[in-house]
Length: 192
Image (cartoon, rainbow, N blue to C red; front, side, top):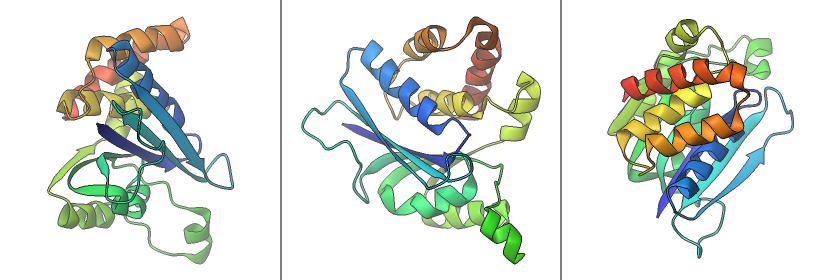
């Protein structure tokens, strides 16, 4: 069984990414289930998506210490969700910080480099994805979720085929968004 925990803030595409991964696993002939825990605010609030693959007997929510892969759309959410990761798990984190409103109002420092350094001090395998570069190359700020899916797929840790992901993208996305998302998928794979 594989357990993938995706975390970010509202509006980043965390839920869509989890559904792409689950549907791709099913395209590969495997069982998958998802669940989300969404914070108070839809846009800007915490979003955590759980994806469990290959076990019909497991609960939808991943218990602490059981996630094989932690996929973080934002460094602060990665730090907050580290307790879910197995000791030998993988962290894939986008380096673009999204400063919480409370930190902005209080004038608190919100430094993505320090957060990523902290993650690296706690986890042996960390892959940092340059979200700004990928968005710039694709021409849209809304492709980070698909880029992170590409990084996950390329690691091989989720055991999901790239062909299955491409099929799901073709099925789920409007045709006018397909090319930029396919590019994001490829760029995300390069990060692994």
